[in-house]
Amino acid sequence: MNKKRLAVVGATGSIGRSALDICRRFPEAFEVRALAVRSNLKGLKALEGEFKPKFVVIYEEAAARDYVPLFDSTRVLKGKEGLKLLVQEDLDHIVFASSGTDAIPALMMALARKMEVSLANKESLVVGGPWVMETVDSFDQLRPIDSEHSAIWQCLLGERREDIEEIALTASGGPFLHATYEEMKNATPEIALKHPTWRMGAKITIDSATLFNKGLEIIEACYLFSMPLDRVKAVVQPDSLIHGCVRFCDGSSKLLLSKPDMRIPISFALSYPRRLRLDEAFHRPQITEWKVNFLKIDEEKFPCYGLARRALQMGNAYPPILVGADEAAVEAFLGGVISMVDIFPLLERTLLSYNGPSNLNSLEEAIALVDFGRREAGRLSRLFSE
Ligand code: NDP
Ligand code: MG
Image (cartoon, rainbow, N blue to C red):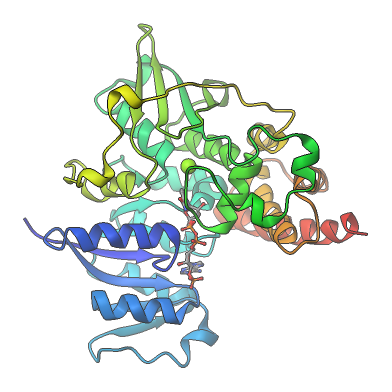
C-alpha cells in the first residue's frame, strides 16, 4: 500500500494533534508531509523534529520571520499565500483542523483541485456551506471529522437519500446540563472550560457549554447532507457514546456508538473506505455497561442553540455573522468582560444590527460578514460590561 502523503493544517491544536497521533500509530499508512500553524513555533518545532515534514506553514508572518527549520530539507511557507502554495504541492490528503476562517480559501483550492480533504474546521461549512458544497463531488473527497457528522456519514453509507426521514446529532449537554440559571450566570471561565466528556480547544469548549456548538453543527449537517432544517435535530446523550442517528422511512434507525475520542472519527476520515485497527484503549465499554439515554434539549436554558437554527432560516448571510459574533462573545467571556448568560443576547443583538441582504451571492461576501459580526459583537460587548 502506498503511504498517504498528508498535510495537517492546525497541527498544534486539539484536532491536529489527534490526527498526528493516528499518523504516529500507523507510519506504514501515512507520511506527514506538511504541518501548518498560526504562530505556535515551540509546538511546531517539536512536531517538526518528530515528523520531519517537507513543508511547514506559519500563518502569522511576523512569527514566521525568525523561524529556522530543524532540517535543511524543510521549506518554510508563510502567511495566507503560504497556505495556498501548500495546496499546490504533491499531497494526497489535507486535514483542515485550524480554528477560524483563515483557511477557507486554501480549502476551496484543495477542493477545486479534487484533493481528498478531511474537514474538522466548523467555520468553513457554517460560513461557506453553499459554495463549499458546490465544489464537492462526494464524501470520498470531503470527509467530515466532527464526531456527529462522521456518525451520520457512516450511518448513511449504502443508503438512498429518499429513504432518510430524519437526522439527529447528539450533544453531551456540557457542564451546565443540570445547572440553574444562577449557576450559569456566575460560572467562571474555569468552570465552563471543564467539559464532562470531551477534551477540546477553549473556543469549542465554551460553545459546547452554551450549546451554540450544537447549533453550528446543525447548520453544518444541513449543508453537508443536503437536508432541510426541519429534518435535522439534536438530542442530549449525556455519556457521549452515541454520536448521531438516522431514522429511515421504514421506521428503522441507525445509530453510531463509540467512545468519545476524536481519534476514532479522524482515523475513519483518513483511512476511508478502510478502517484502521485501533487498539483496545479505543474500544467502547462492554455492551452491558452502555447507558444509552436521550434527553430533549432545554431551549430556554440554552437559547444559543435555537438562535443558530434561526440564523440559517433567515438566510445564508446570518450564519457567518453569528460565527464572527461568537468569536468576540467567547473572547469577552474568557476575558471576564461578560458573563456566560450574556453570550446569547450579545449574539442576538449582533444579528439584529445587520441590515444588508439576507442571501449572499459569493463566499467573499460571507467571509466579510464574519468580520462584521466580530466587530459589532466586540463593540456591543463593551456596552454589556458598562
Ligand atoms: P485549537 O484551538 O485547539 O487549535 C487550533 C489550531 O489551528 C492550532 O494549531 C492553531 O495554530 C491553528 N490555526 C489557527 N489559525 C490558523 C491559520 N490561520 N493557519 C494555520 N493554522 C491556524 O482548536 P481545535 O483543535 O479544538 O478545533 C479546530 C477546529 O476544529 C475548529 O473549527 C473546531 O470548531 C473544530 N472541531 C474541533 C473539535 C474538537 O474536539 N476539538 C471537534 C470538532 C470540530 P497555533 O497553535 O499556532 O495557534
Ligand atoms: Mg461535535
